Figure 1: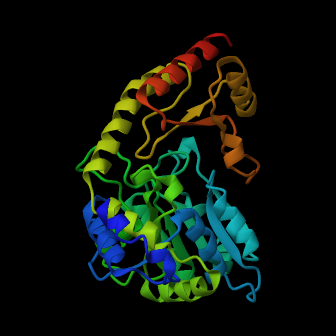
Figure 2: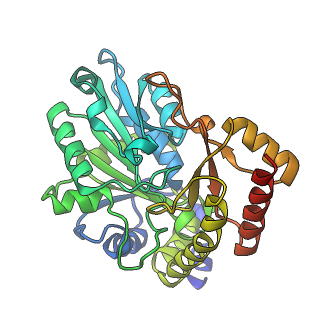
Length: 349
């Protein structure tokens, strides 16, 4: 922690909105590691106060509300920041239902060309929250082709990208997909990441954005007015975290251990499967998800999130209804205890 203590005088001056050189170097090493292993060293990066802050503020920077009918597309279920960012940017959210029947794929063909023509921004999340689905190279290619055709920007939320199960099989990210497809300018593409899940430090509020240099220049201009430059002490701590892979590998090992122990117990009563990546089980409930979550908490003191709370009704359905999101964040012992309590509750139904 000497690197952090040596920077305690940082708060004596206003921090710069643009990247700190040591921070940029640490992130570059992370980019060339498991997360986006095919990216060039010259890739532009910008420090942000966690991915949530950046995902929200980015919409404010890129949505042009002077254009008629500005639209922002997002998956459904989804991280609620996407919707709020769209609304406060003066845009209308458009949803793509991700359904179990389609293995939670992002069905880009479900959006009409007339809708894409008004779309200015799309949020994608891979590995997905809550399903854990990782987008395939063919899906990325289709999305890039649509972006080229209609001119919209892609914001790829990859905060779960370093929680996966096989060390030699990291999930495919947006920047890796672009590089594999020869898109080395990363046109109209930004990737958002953070230390929150990678290093289990959500309270530190530290992340970065990388991708299209022109988009980053526009975003940086906005951020100089937004007043969201990263605290120098946080930057110093972040450098330590980004430079260390040992704790990340151990974090993955612990999550893999929990999934191996807990998934069979939960799936014996609630249909679910090991996600592609991330730390959630997306489990189907035998009753209304809100009733299930309420009664489970009341009877067994176990908290799960009703899936319908993560989604909006679209095309006549709420795609989160009938599911609950189970987070395997606590210790193995606590996760096993919760899984057994879920079994006991389900057996009583």
